[in-house]
Image 1 (cartoon, protein in one colour):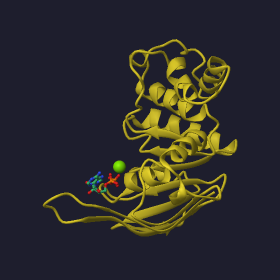
Image 2 (cartoon, helix red, strand yellow):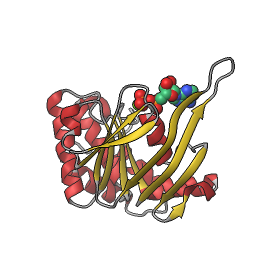
Image 3 (cartoon, protein in one colour):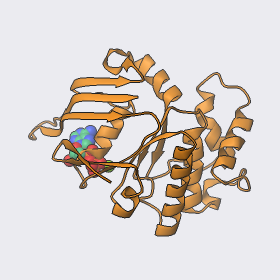
Image 4 (cartoon, protein in one colour):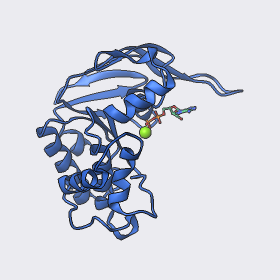
Length: 222
Ligand SMILES: Nc1ncnc2c1ncn2[C@@H]1O[C@H](COP(=O)(O)OP(=O)(O)O)[C@@H](O)[C@H]1O
Ligand SMILES: [Mg+2]
């Protein structure tokens, strides 16, 4: 499903030494996998996730997503592919504060030609166990519930892959584990999931763990 070859990324800022964040990363993900990416802060995890999620381009290397060559895509094609293929979950939920849970989940559908958007949003919220919180605003939900709304939003387009950047990073242990249980359930139902975490206990639940260190990926068996 995902094939990265020799992906490199360097950040250059005026007056500063160039920062080689990714140094020839090779990485494959098969359909249906549940992969954790771990590594110290600043090691390039988010940079890698942004490239995987078509939010940023590598300086060099080859990225094939579902058989398509990503480097050949125009900005419009990237955006289209991103919306149709990838669901994102972030550490800081990133929900719109002034609209309900249902309207937050409907949002990705607004950018596609989808019909029955409310019904689809409600279905996604049921999948994450929030059928009783449909018209709540984010401020009326706990952190764990807000993250589950964000997961419903990631699911609503029926993506090929879910990318999550420290999805439990802002949650206490119990709600963090509930979010993990939900990811495990979605994975068993067929979703391919890639997530970044600092938490070894969380990483241990993945079927595969890769470590990023000093710009290079190493596999660690689980
Ligand atoms: N847009 C950017 N411009 C310059 N430096 C950046 C940029 N994004 C990230 N970095 C730097 O690249 C390194 C890796 O960042 P990041 O991928 O966010 O690490 P992680 O998610 O593993 O903590 C950090 O040193 C960070 O400061
Ligand atoms: Mg990060």
